[in-house]
Image 1 (cartoon, one colour):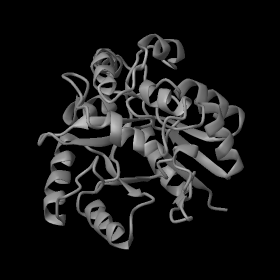
Image 2: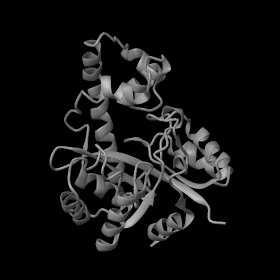
Image 3: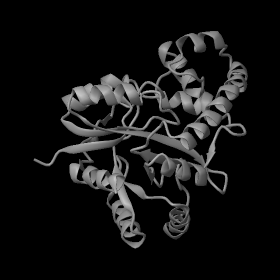
Length: 286
């Protein structure tokens, strides 16, 4: 039997609906043999998930999805898979980013207040799931109080219009570096989405991905719910030309994106093989 895996998932530590333990329970229920928890710019759920995954006989990789500042000013997402979050270089960069994010929350709340929503920072602190506040605590305030129609609507109306401040984003070259320092592998997530290279043609995208490879990028996310056959052909071309590793996952957010199922994506349109996971494990062990 060829098991399936999901190496792109989110918990309620950021913008998913499941706790880290609940995420593992979903993996058991859906017969997903291996997962990576890759919360946005956050490692807070990794220990809980790793411990519970071991109890439930689910193979688990510690991960993160870093919102990285690219050279043209856009933000792209870099997945770090198989990281050691206790690594000193990684921990220091993470701390600097999270401290800046916490400062940024104050500005973000003042901007949201201009839209008629007054969010008490003390409530955010009381309900915080980690050491530092960030915009995901504000996101959870909206979901907790059912002040939204869709989860994406919260980002579109309140959060995304407010740009990140200085030091709130890790530069892409540093993101790749700290993932490597933490003995993990770096993958470009959803290459053609807004948090990727949306708007560029194939030749322009290849130029940018080639640049990322020159920085030490290990691979690309090959399996993703919104990819079509043309995307797969293009990614296969890049994988072969640049000798890239590949990853894949549903970008699972639980009930916050109910149409997306763990390990299976949108209407069962992905099925990431356990063999891919084994290749990643082999590379991590080399």
